[in-house]
Amino acid sequence: MNSSSQDSKNKTQTAQDIILEQQQIIEKKSRVIEQHEARIRLLEEFLRLEKHKRFSHSSEKLPGQGELFNEAELLHCDSDEVEEPDTEAPEANDETQPKKKPGRKGFSDSIPREQVFIHLTDEEKEGAISTFYSKVKEELDIVPSKVRILETMQEKAVFVDEGQRKIKAAALPKHPIGKVMASIGLLAYLIVAKYMDGLPLYRLEGILKRYGGDVTRTSMASWIIQLAVQCQPLIHVMRAHQHAGNLIQMDETRIQVLKEKGYVPTGNKYMWVTLGGPPNEPVVIFDYDPSRGHEVPLRLLEGYDGYLQTDGYVGYDAACEKLKLIQVGCCTHRHKGSLPPQI
Image (cartoon, rainbow, N blue to C red):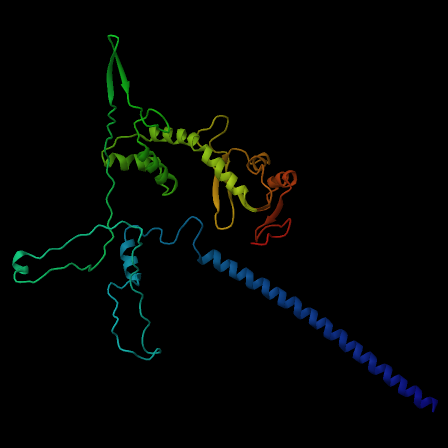
């Protein structure tokens, strides 16, 4: 009896050892499989990045670059615009009938309209009881730029007081930069063309010359610099608008300035860009500074209390610490806090 019990016990112990050994083998194989799966995912990501580097557009090339002269032909071939879509086509099976191309969109109601009347001749109207006009189409038109000279004629009145002649002149309207040969309209045009349309001053010089206005780019540069001083109160308002929100995104971009006292032309200077403001009312401000030091964010963020989203550059740490800001990172950089609720 004792011998039989001992044999049963040994068999039980042997079975448990076998099960334990099999479990260990399964766990080891599971770890190997997990490692292989992780390596496969890593290799797939490397492959995706290599394909992106090889086949995607480089950072210095834009889609369509180099197609300057055949751009119109390419866009015409790819256009889905239909001048007069057929609205009376018979119904057909969705699987066999090709999808209908969208018709041309109408123009905005905010664009001013000018009516062009096409008249019948007297012979064509002879015998008609009445005539009427109907709108048959709308065409987008543009009036080319033109240069003109505004001659300001100041009225003056002559008075005689105790035998002495006195002259009183009408008050002249204020000009943002004083006695220059550029009207307010021309100054606004230069600002929009340079900073909204990206036209450099040498191109604007050529455009004005083609229209008959001979203005050097040196004069235009001087006007823009003087206007910057006049626009500074507006910059202060925009900065206050940014600080009214609870999130500011900030980054510094390297630029080169050819002529700046105390700095070499090949050295790096920086354009500090901030984006922020109340929800659905964002404001972007560009602020130039030759330094990349921490004192620049301290100056630009003074008075702000909220979240600051950056790329993790250490130059923002001092501002976050001194101004008690919550610093958050983007998707590819380190995070120093939690994302704000609206992100």
